[in-house]
Image (cartoon, rainbow, N blue to C red; front, side, top):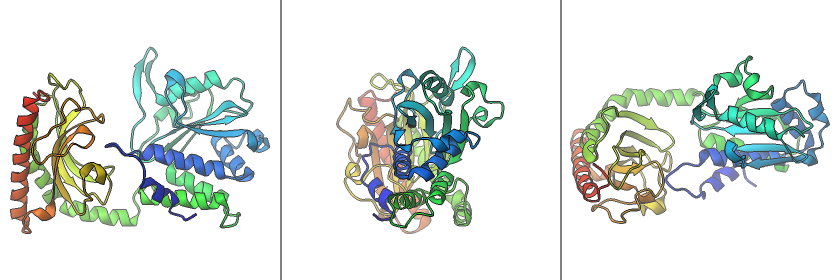
Length: 375
């Protein structure tokens, strides 16, 4: 096994206009934990439930089971669940750049972790081990009550453990340091660390290289954002948008883009509230927004794009056609062109790009109006 195991496998994942990073990282974590020998596993589980619970050191590791995407009825689907002797024990919620889902309840505001705690309380009555809730994050702050010393009540007195992906991976690596280098757990732990590094998840805050790169981006941001803004001025008329809707230019690391977007109003054949206009610059080497099979070719270098999209895959199946020059990945409407197709001079290139976006936007609006997909 090589240290790039998880990186290699991730390249073959199934993708449908979404980045399954959270689910994949969870599977990698579960596989690594399952590989741990008895002593490192007991120490890791003790981290989760708290060192004051010495009973964990006496557990029978053969009774430990680790599940992913566990069905918890109306409570939802926790990312991971550790059972002991068949009973729910430690519940995991794992996040990568997404906030915890919140909703209003009879008792005020509630959220995903509290609901999972309620479920665990109901189903752990026969578990002989002290229960715990684990929240693993990257670029996602935990709810205030999860880390508060006063937060015992919403979590029924369960131990609460918060960490980042990188910190947890390094902890597991430290726990297996004494094993031979060819041990399965050592190789999986190193593969997990390598994978996190490849996805820029080994540290939640910027290292020296990231700060240097940020300086370069900031120094060029004004001209880059000016180009995207000019592109947006041409793209915004693809569909009518609500008066309260606004757009902003932003970098989206998950998709490797710098873009401007805005949600569109519903239309006779498109009642979803998740349809939106978007235009920007895509850097395909940074991340795979769509894969090469959906695009029809491999992409190299920055590309300009404009289109009409929906947050749900295959939403626009009411029509199979598209204006000339548009692709239909995941049923969305996407026009894309390499930067190299435009002039080399920055100002001439910028003008050509804006003209290209204007032409594509006009053609797309005409088609979508005809199909009653936009208003």
